[in-house]
Length: 142
Image (cartoon, rainbow, N blue to C red; front, side, top):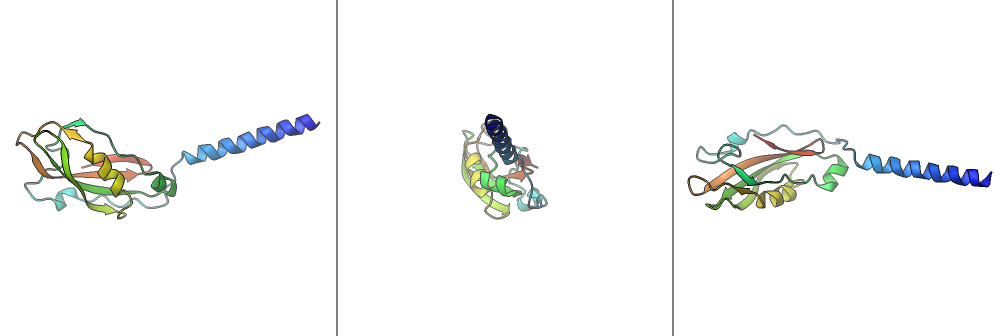
């Protein structure tokens, strides 16, 4: 009887621990996703917009920040960047983000590592890219 109770306790504890682990992998939104901005509305006619003139050579989306993921935060970041004649990014900066500051660091860090095909015009200035952090996933906007 004592062995039976001990085995039951071990099984119960294992089930409880596995339930906790599976909940940590589930994103539960606790903030509304803010409407996407109209990126072209922030740009001048001579600015480049992501996807129109940029051809990626090396590209990784940012990671969803752990704290934001666990807290259920959602939002977006408009990143401005320049592309050198060699296709490297420089002058990476946040133009606007919602919620302010929540996803800025991870977005800037990822964009700094991007590489593009060398631009036909020699370089590109004031490129804008929208990065969405929505429902636990990261994507690019237009």
